[in-house]
Image 1 (cartoon, rainbow, N blue to C red):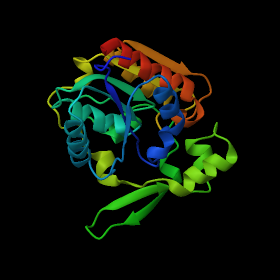
Image 2 (image 1 turned 180 degrees about the horizontal axis):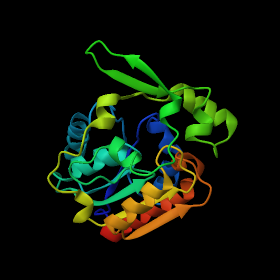
Image 3 (image 1 turned 90 degrees about the horizontal axis):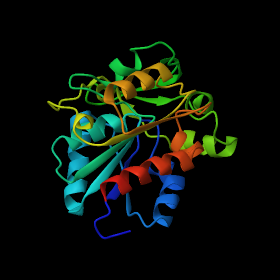
Length: 239
């Protein structure tokens, strides 16, 4: 691809880490797309977005931001103040408007069973962070991922703060309203109800939306072909 091809910046969400993108990264690099996997702190929308902005500015080149789950919150917040962003891809992700939080969007429609699987850890600053009970992780987060891989994901999962999940989008505009954007999500997502995904996609008016039959929340792991295809479409659209 030409030198102006945007770099794909991959932003994992809660209860995941950068390795969740490995299969997608392999396909993107095979297509000559540069990739950077952002280690999302999962502390607060504003702080996480600021860290993402620092990374993007250090690259000094155009980028496509690719957010999974809560990573969609962070990508949307960060993109509002980044001229380098040429497109957005939401992968089983929250697609917030100003003032909306991950918790708001997940609870807008019935169907999420995430809350009953969470284990809280009190923090020294008075807050709380959550992880998914490892014994329930596969069923909740990655039911279509092979057992051994899902077990490893459960052990490596990154916790997210309660504050991050409740913090609304602070940007005055939603970046997806002015940038080309794509969406891909699983029909059997048990973290974010599929009705919420469909509603967010209809509101956003994406360039393209892909709904994967029977797929879980962990679609970057279980359905990397579809995820990579969406990212490649965004990269090629803006090259």
